[in-house]
Length: 213
Image 1 (cartoon, one colour):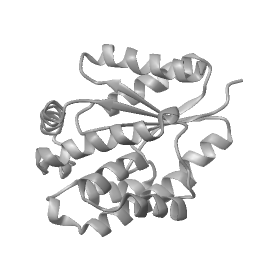
Image 2: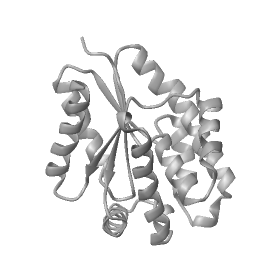
Image 3: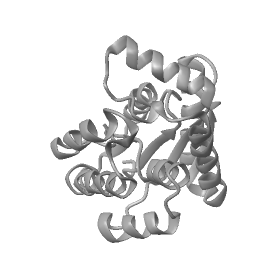
C-alpha cells in the first residue's frame, strides 16, 4: 500500500499544466496509487465561482489585495473540502496550480511581499504544502503564444493574466525557479519544450525519481 501524496503542477501560462495533470493521475493509478485531479483557483463549487471572477475580464478588475485574498479564500475551501479529505482516505491529489502560483503571480508578478503571502497561507490555509511540486519550465514568449491560441480556440474567458506584459511573465518564471532553488527536496523542474508525450515522459521520470528517493 502506497502512502498518499499531494502533488502540485506549476508553471507559466501555456506551459501545458492542465494536460499534464491527467497524465500524472493515469501514471499514479497504474502504479497502484488511487489519485484525484483538481485545480486552482477552483476544485470546489465555491472555488469555481471565484475562478470565474478572478480569471475573466481585464487586468484592472481587482485590486491586488482583493485578488490575493480571493485566491486564498478559494484555497481554504479547496484544502478543507478536497485535498485533506482525499489524503485522509489514502487518495493522492494532483492539483493544477497551488500556493506556488500565488507566490509567483501575486508575489513576484504583482510585487506583493512573499513573506506576507506565506504568512497568510500559514494562518488561513493551515500551512498545507505539497509533497512534490512539478514546475513545467518554458520560455514565456512560447507559453503566452500557446495559451492565447488555446483560449481563443476553446472560447474560454480566462485570459486576464495573459493580457499582462512579457516582463510580468518573465518574473513569474524566475519566481518558480527561485522557489525550486530554495526548496530542492520538494521541487522538480521539468523542461516543458517538446511534444506533450516528451514532456509527460520527463514528468513521470521526475515523479518516479522522487518516489525512489
